[in-house]
Image (cartoon, rainbow, N blue to C red; front, side, top):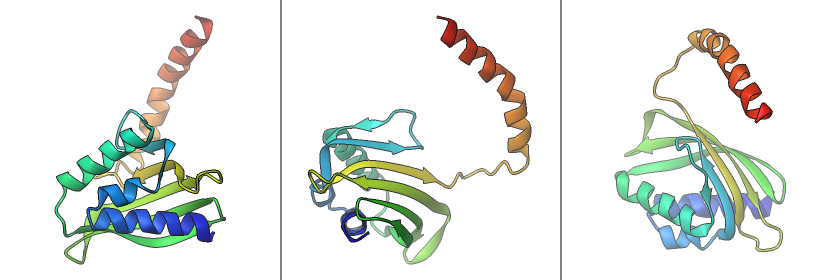
Length: 146
């Protein structure tokens, strides 16, 4: 786990210091980065740099990512984390991420971030899924016929 864990820790440290060039230096040119807060995937180092730049310039300097746990192997790790503001846990500021490092470049080739939602539907989520499922089946069926 050392290789992937060390890369991920270094990226988090760089972001916490608002050192975008330092974080981007650890990103592979062909990186695919999915932040589930966004509808589009960030494809390539330049797109990831844009995400990191906007993130770092949009939040206060004392908003920091804290790694809670890492698990994985040499080339991939899962991370649980939370956000703190001035050393205090930020409300609804938890997340889970998965990262893969390229054996060829030794840099981050894939990332996916899933952030705790500000609104929690609880059991209503099951009702929404039941209500939406027939619509999804219909639209998936339509797209497969065309």
